[in-house]
Each structure stands twice: as structure tokens, then as C-alpha cells.
Image (cartoon, rainbow, N blue to C red; front, side, top):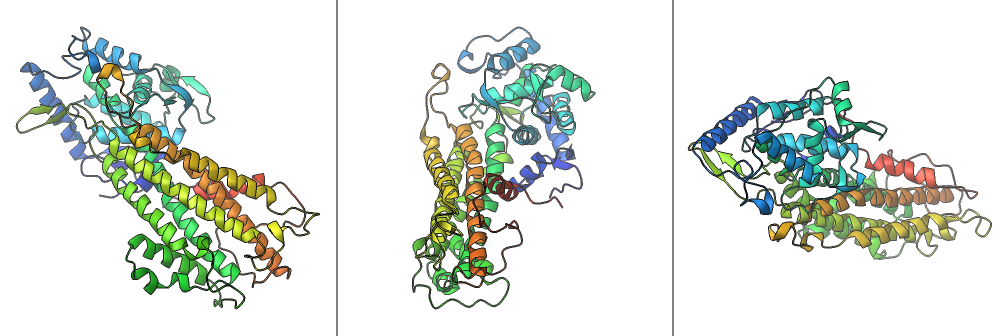
Length: 505
């Protein structure tokens, strides 16, 4: 079953979401959601099972017990009081608020997880979350507070409280509004949660998976852009295409490398007939010659991460889980985010290496011994003007930022929660880091493209070897840098273009 922005996004056990669909939904405020009939049936059956088990006296975590390390203690007397206690004590997050797109993605993913029909929450609560999404309600969710072990308890508690009319929401301009007022403006009533409702809303991986899904979608595009940019640099410099020969890469056998070589070759050969320049060296330096090997490995890491994340976002991350025929409950750990943590670390590593490669190509473009004899730093009048000297410093600083954040977050467990959560995934930190790497890579790609355009202008003015080929259609129209001017706005504008999801069908 597929989803399209032209109709409501269907959620439920018969629907398979992808990272690009999650990104499209997150960035399309007027895209509504609908539960499939299978989802409605599964949710109703799970609730019936929960009530049957409860009537039989079966112990049920969070319903007949306290929460977390206090599981051996009796919970609050009423289901409503138990729910209030849970979400109130968890609403202790800190830091800046998550971007609106991330919150919208997490709400949709939480609804999709609940719609798998294993949580047993009331349909009224399912519909409340659905209505909030359709109204484009955005709870104010702090970024810090989850260790990714018992799901994203703290951030998701802010969503649950907003549905109850507590806490705050964010307007489109980023300003805060009381959640009760936001609900009223959307003509929605605050919902009263019971204990299972509250637990089902907070006890999953939806926050980390939202970050990771959007990071996957962006990483796929950025890798493709890096391949396209590399291909045009081959063409711009008149470099031999031998390093891109299909036979060469098929002899090694790595699928990502084969695909990257094909993509780079296609970009190099686009447009007029391609003729390498005799003046180029027999073997280009590694940032060109080994680009398929580097970007191909990055492509495979991104594909691996995407497979894991897409499995996670289509599964039931909650505890306990309910099953029918016969009615039974399993107390387990499907809220543990280790897969997301490992996948996000892989994303961060791949994104960092893309940035490293493109920054090295930038250095090649700025170096007369490598760029066909253009002036140093692509300065139009060296000494009087400075070309890309300042922009290169920024690219170098961006690579340092990337490297500093590429750490093994998935193995950074810190025991907490009174010893109950003695092994935690740190998946939320890993996923947020991967997402936050993407603007850095986009800015490096932007500087790289602007420098390539400047070299083209220099070729056109006979200040460097080359044929001044027509640039890729998605690149900006850049005036020659004949006098020093601030490049800040040009860098950021093109980086934003590279980050933006494709136009919706």
C-alpha cells in the first residue's frame, strides 16, 4: 500500500512507510492522516484484549503497577491519576525545542506505531492524536531528556500533555502558545487519558525515529548531490573518465561503488560531447580518482541505515504488547532504541566522509597545480582580491564540526532510572546528531559548487584551462567573483536548496 500527498496518508498494519514519505509528511502541514480499517480493527481488538486480561486479574505493567523502577509499588488509585502522574513527572526535558517538522513526524510515527494494534489504548486517544495532526498542532518538545531506552519517554510526555491541554505548543513563527489555547483555536477538546493511554503515548521510539527518518531522506539526497557535483568537476577539469569505467568497479563488486561510479560518470557526460584534456595527469589525486569508492561506501552505509530505520518506523515500539487468539500480554523491551542508535551512527559517519571528500575537492579547485592553472584560491586578481579564501575557511570549519560529532554514540550507555535502565541506547542523541550533520554537508556542497562556478568563469575569461561547460541545472546562477563580496547569503541559499525535499507529486 503506498501513500501520496494528494490524498490522506494512510496509517496502520497494512501500510509500509518510507523515510522520504515521512519527510514529505513532516514538511507538508496540510497533509492529513487516515487510519485504515485494519488499524481500527486491530486497535479495537487490542483494547478488548486488555480489558479481558484486566478483568481476569492478569498483572499489567502501568495499569496494575507503578512505573519504571517503582513497578513493585502500587500505582495511583485511579487510571486518570496514574496517567497524570506519569506524564507530569516525565515532563522534565530541557534544551531548545525540536523543529516543527520533527515534532510533526514524531506524532505521525507514534500514531502509526499505535495503529499496529498491540498497545491497547482507547480509540478516543488514537483519534485525539489524529485530530491534532490534522490540525497541524505542534507541541513544544525539548530536544534533551531521552536516553533512548524505554523509548523517548521525556519528549513524548510533552506531546501527551499537549493533548491534555497542558504545557505549550509552537506557532508557525516559533513562538509559544498555551496548549489549551492551541486546542481551542483548532476547535479540539483536551483529552483525559487513562494509564494505558499515557503509557502508550510515551513508551516508544518515535522521537528518535523522526530525527533518523528525516536524516536518512536528507542523506540520500546529499550523497546523490555529491556524486553529481563530482561528475561535473571531472568535466570542468577535463579529467580522464577512466576511474569511472564500469568494468573497473564491477571487478571489485561493491554495489554502492558501482552505483556511485555510474552516477558520477553520467553527470560528467551530461551535455555536449566530453573530451578529456591532455594536460591532465595520468592519475588524478584521490578526492577525484577514488570518489566512487568513497561515495559508494557512504551510499551503502546510508542504505543500511535507511533499511533499519524504515523497519523501526513501521513496527510496534511499546511495552507491554497485546496479542489476540488467545488473549495474551508480553512484557518486553520493544521500546529500546539500539537499532536506531547504530543506524544513526552509520549515517553520521557517512555524512562526515561525504563532507571530507567534497572539502578536499574544494581544495583541488582552489590549487593552481590541480585546477588547470587558475589563479590561487580562484582570485580574479590575486592580491587585490581573495577569491574563495574565506569560504574555504568555512568549509574547513564545517568538516571539523562534522568530525567532532561523529562518535560512537550507540555504545555510550550510562545506567540510570534507579538501575532499572542499566543499558540504554542513546539512540535519540545519535539520531539528532545525524540530522544536525546534514546542514553542514549541504553548506560544504554549496561552497564547492560556487567555487566550481567561479573556476568556470575563470575558464571563460581564459584565466584557466578548460572549456567552461554548462553547469548542472540545479546549481544557482552565480556572478563572477571579480571583486571581493560576502558569500554568506549565496552559500546558505544554495545549501537550503540542497536540503529541501523534492516537490510533492
